[in-house]
Amino acid sequence: MPLLTTSNTKTRKGEGQGFLTLILHLAPAKLSGYNVCPMATKGCAASCLNTAGRGRFAKIQTARIAKTRRFFEDRDNFMRELAGDIRAGIRKAEREGLILAVRLNGTSDIRWETISLEGARNIFEMFPGVTFYDYTKLPNRRDLPPNYRLTFSRGEQSPDKVRDIIRGGRNVAAVFRVGRREELPLFWEGLPVIDGDRTDLRFLDPEGVVVGLRAKGAAPRDRSGFVLEPTA
Image: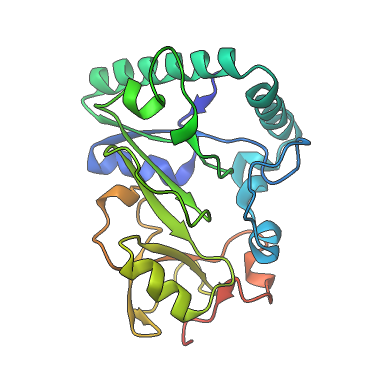
């Protein structure tokens, strides 16, 4: 089974904009026995989309746990296989006339920029022509490669904290208690909101915005402050 897949419904929306997206799903938080989400908040953990879609099947959960354990216990071979999947993705994108994009933290928050492989400082340096992107809750990920775009994922931070992050040059993704067919607010706490559910291609977003996401899975039941009211 490949490490990277194209089976995510949201990432498939990018094909209409000319992008083939590969995504890596690991077992989130400490589900595998290893913590891949060091800054996960209570609300984030309770609302995780790990079990959404195909993730509800036991065999998918077993595979994600196995991948995560391999990452920690057999790192060199894991990274070589990851590089092989990206090479295969490049060939597939070329055959289909698409541009490859890769999201490594589908259900994790790993500092991939710190992991070297095969003489390269990181996977981004090995594939400079590939666009990588992720969401993160780690506030101190700086000096990133030019082909790696990060969007900060809001936990239960205050509006002032969100403003500080945006002023620092990073967009912030936030979950709203809005139905799937309802419109997201145009502004939240005076900050412009864009619809992040239309596509997962965060590297195409304008700068200085809140990336609005509709509450899915267990998220609509959240009362921790992780899910925002649209009128807040």
